Length: 179
Image 1 (cartoon, rainbow, N blue to C red):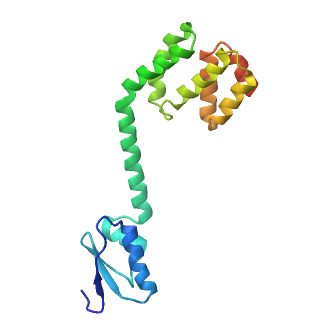
Image 2 (image 1 turned 90 degrees about the vertical axis):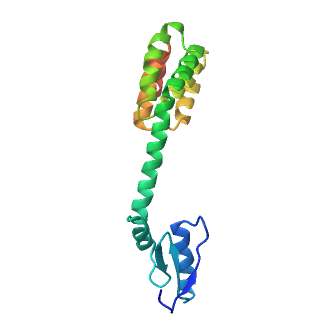
């Protein structure tokens, strides 16, 4: 270590970002310090966020953040896939509470497909909420307010409309009303 730098210790559990910000605080004050972060020495006068991330992880901060986000998404997807069998039973039971009996067999067939798709079954609940309104003689306007409150993209909106059309006796009427 160069003797012109005072050595500082980063707090245990510090993130790279916090360590860099701590060094930058010293830089603003004109104080030369350095600190060891997981075997990499960082200096207050030369540190940058991307430089520190690159030295420690081999990735820039944005590359590292993207990598972390992807790992978290992969983990969530894996956990969801493991849970599909129990989710299937839950959604089949929910369908039986709301849908007419002649729709149950087809509902049971599509539940695992919907749980395994992009939306991970979100559309199942959306469909059932609208079917509940329509099957209980609710107004088309109330059902429309429900679908509008669900925050759909164009694709999920179309998917939910198709499902309502299929699983609700008033589905065709509803779809014509909302489109």
